[in-house]
Image 1 (cartoon, rainbow, N blue to C red):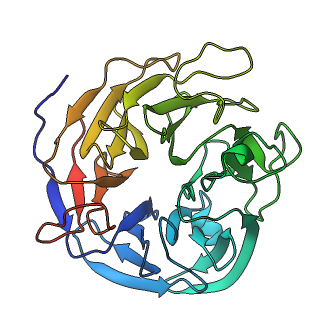
Image 2 (image 1 turned 180 degrees about the vertical axis):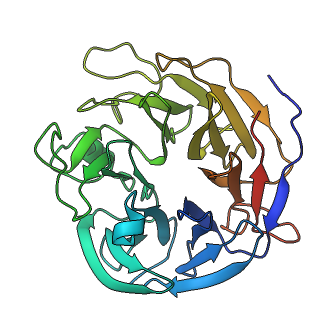
Length: 323
């Protein structure tokens, strides 16, 4: 199903692989650039300032400066968090940010790294805890190994400790993931994640405490006991879904290989309706999708990432008015 929405507005051009977007209370956003390791501050009018260059980033393959999250108590604690690939691992680092970055603290280290599948999304849930997605780096078995931090969704305090109520007493919230790059919650607190399949099925999953999402034993829907089936699958040519946001009764997923924005309606029980493809092929690879305070979505392109075809002005941030 295809629909023809209003054309997005280009907010910013000339970026280099903008990987993640997180909003500060005043409406400005922090944006990561994967390969430059720059953390940018972007205003709703499209002004760009460098907030800092993140120390210790080792960008290669699919790794580099990836996720960013802003504390839900930012006005009190001024904490921002970044996820990045270092020399020997992926890690999560907390900063204090008040116009400049200070008080650097590594809160999680030892997340497996690889040339591919580094995960990298950070987001605070409605419970106030920080969630992080990790990939299995191409080492498929670690997704099923609950003692490994690879191929998981993690849940933690702002100090990097396992959050109260975690199912295994560790950082692990769910397991059996190949490479999750999108996390979002709806108005009723249901949690969703986008996940890259291998050759056949990309997924959106409803994320529930302690569940096993099947990789590498399962790709797509299996109905096998012990594994949680996805809500929705696409072919990998249609999706390779990365960023995910919730707005106006729907999930919005950016597609890399699929070069489109997917609108996926969800109902009160967390079930999905028929997805609609927006802007197919118009802007190239779409990476980050974030719900802005004013009701719009900010969507980043990823055409400078070595797998796209850059156009004049790439990479860019688009402003979409969801309907």
